[in-house]
Length: 286
Image 1 (cartoon, rainbow, N blue to C red):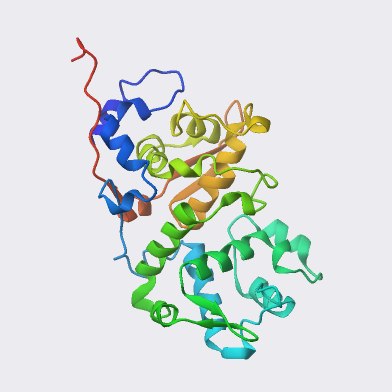
Image 2 (cartoon, rainbow, N blue to C red):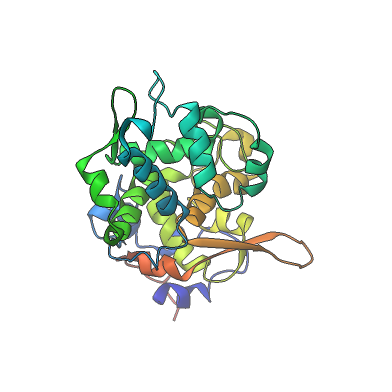
């Protein structure tokens, strides 16, 4: 890719790669949903085997199957959230990468939906996508939701949930992986450009600090309390959700800093593609 060739000439210091984009392409990626203008394409044609690493898809299928059972399945409270029994059953039947320690801590205790933030996020995503709707005593499958139970619809389910999560959900409603509730949508309102940047920068293992600086808008700073540590919010709102979609992975690197490093998975380039133009090189550059 031209982007990757250009990166080899980028300054050694860590700074945003956004200036490499032509202004028109950057603007297209910053639309409310750039998938509507071909700047960013999200594939809906992947099969179940290719999406086996998507926790969001696997867990959404569990939730949809419970809703398909009728009143005895996905029971609700008077507030329109999952009942205690539904929360307990979902906890038993779903798995969230890197939440094992948290779930072990929860064992033996009954929790409301609001106390299990990843489950609350999933239920709201599925409902926002129009796959379930509240009934008298339980969530019910919609026609679209029933269609998504077909194994041949896994690609469509991934694409739909992806667009709902990154362009229609408010991340400040959820506790997140590393941080408590933080107001605002930084950096999610720029997710189109961030995904493009990750496509090049995260080809190799990188620290979250590097990715947070390289892939975000240098003109828009993080909320005040995180200005010294933007990586924490970037991990919670971008990298972990992408991991749960099967698009990013991380590992501990035994180097002088002993830090976690992230890179994109092979699924990233199969699921996402970009139609953008790079900025013209400065005068005198060859």
